[in-house]
Image 1 (cartoon, rainbow, N blue to C red):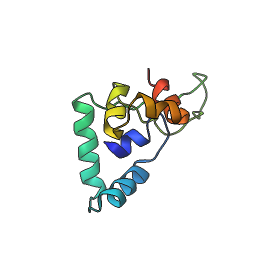
Image 2 (spheres, rainbow, N blue to C red; image 1 turned 90 degrees about the horizontal axis):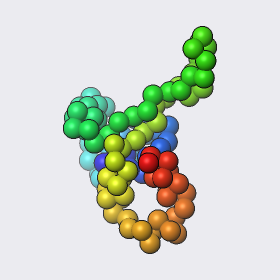
Image 3 (cartoon, one colour; image 1 turned 180 degrees about the vertical axis):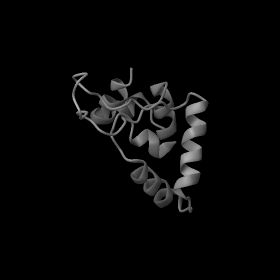
Image 4 (cartoon, rainbow, N blue to C red; image 1 turned 120 degrees about the vertical axis):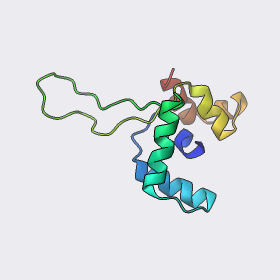
Length: 102
């Protein structure tokens, strides 16, 4: 969840999040297991990705092609990263990504 929180409001690929998890936690995890964890978090309404946006109904392609990573409640991301209000005041880019979730 910490890696997912670091990628809040971004178009991060699942493979990048998996690589971050395995590197930071020094564990081995397959993509199938990772997908199972993501599915469980979605069923529990912890995470919910925003699908790609297409400006016109008749357009063949979407402007964004991958989903945007989101938590149902942005406070979950703050708790997962173990940061407080003072830390967010100094890291305005992170605050912006979290604020985008509201």
